[in-house]
Every structure is written in C-alpha cells, then in structure tokens.
Image (cartoon, rainbow, N blue to C red):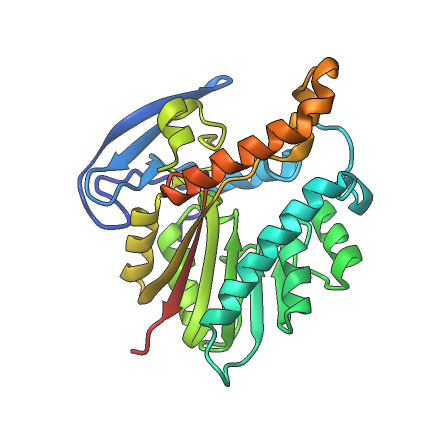
Amino acid sequence: MLSNTETTHYKTCPVCSGSIKMWRIKDLGDKKYNIDVCDSCGYAFVNPRPPLSFLMEYYSSSCRGHDNSSTETPSLNSVIEDGKDHLQSISDHRRVFSTIKSLSKNGHNNKFLDVGCGIGSFSKEALEAGFEVTALELSKEDREITKEMTGINPAACAFEEYECPSNSLSVVLMSQILEHALDVNLWVKKAHDMLANDGIIAIALPNYGSIFRMIMQENEPFICPPAHLNFFDPNSLSSLLHKHGFKVEAIRWVTRLPISAFEKRFPKFGKPFLPIVHAVSSVSLRAIDALHLGRMIYVYGRKMSA
C-alpha cells in the first residue's frame, strides 16, 4: 500500500495489465485530474493517483466525502424527511438482500461486513435479514446516524486498516465506496481473504457504461475526482473480481430519479401532472436498465474454493 505522501503513475491497466490511453482531463477548481482508460477491459481511473494524505485531508474537510456546499449537519430526521424517496431506497435495498440471500449457501455463517456504511441503511436491512453485522464508516456524522437507526456502533476505520480472521465472513458489501478506493486490487483481494468459501461480495457503484455517461462524457456528475477515482462498467468490474478469485453470479442495472428532484424542478402550474411525468420517466428508466445502460450497477461475486 502507498505511504501517506506517495503517488503512483500506472503505465498499464491495474485491473488487467492492458494498454491504457488518456480519456479526459477533468478540471475542478484549480486542479486538473488526468483520467486514463484501458483499451482491453474498459476500466477508467484517475492517473496518477493522489497521495493518501491528500485524500484523508479531502475527506475530513468534505461533508460526507462529497460536497462542501451544505452547512447543515445531517441527522436521521433530515435523511428520511422525504418519505417517498426513502421508500424508494428501502425497496432498492431489499432487492439487494433478496439477491444476496438467494446466492447464499445453506449452512453458511451469517457474518456481514458493511464497508463504508454511510447512514446505515444497508446495515439496517442486513440486521432485519438475520445477519450479524459489522460496519465501517469514517464520517462521524454518518456513524451517529447509523447508531441511531440500527443500534450498531460503526468502527471509525478505513477498510485498509480493518482486520478480521481469514475465511470468517459470509458477505462483504461495498455500496457506493469502491469508486473512492485508492487501490482497488488491495480492496478486492482483502475481501476475498476475509470471506469463507462460497461467500458473497456485493458491489454497487456508478456505471461508467451508462447512457448518461456516454451522453455527458466527463460532465456526468459521477465523474468527480478526487472523490471518485475509479470508473467501472460491468466488464471491468467483472475482470477485477475474476482476477482475485471470484465468480460473478449476477449483475443488475438500476436507475432511479428521486421523486423530490421532480418536485423541486417542476413549475407550480404543472404540479397536478407530476405523478404522470414521474410514472412515464420510471418506465423509460426501466427500459434503459433492461438495455444494460442504467446509471448504477450491482455486481455479485462468489468466492471460489482454492
């Protein structure tokens, strides 16, 4: 693993060792970030990688690691203030756990690790699904919300520093977190070591192969270094999992637009038509997912026996 002040510049793809070329230079403020893409597997990534010390300073000064614009301290009430959006999230989370349960082998242990648990939504669903949950989260505010929501005290620990016995976990969940990782090989290899044979890794992240990214290119909101350093599509993420001993069991594409987003942007005279517009949009987004061009991907891998 890199030292706190060390940078590295990849000459070949860190996922498949294929040749790479420059895709875009992303300007953010006074900083420029070079993004390369692999000719073989399609993995795109910030290159060179920023120092770990820079990332730690960035996350400590950013509101929940993404946005400095909000001055309001998040709370459980503010998180669930919009009930309709909250219900959408619950529905998505339950589908994730339905898939995890369907892939889990009978007689498996039920130890579940939620890496970067955020506000604890997935940890809550894991508890309700019967798992014994350990959660990791660097954000103090998010840890407090998770504790209030679930009763779990997340460890204030980076995944790189977390230790548990080898072959001891049933499920490792990485939801909206692998795109932030400095060393994706280290993360997936470590998850493989922690999982028991036939254990499941579940990864959710923005889809670099989405139609939205194809249209907007580097202006797509998820192309946002240094918060996001890694840009995967199903092929490149599958290549990473295969490299470290996982068999990809399922891939799902999910695109959601929060109902509150419609309500905030819709003109007042059009409010009566809002349910119709939202219904039509939902049908369109489901069609995009069916074409495997959705905005988010959920990839499930199984640890294969040595």
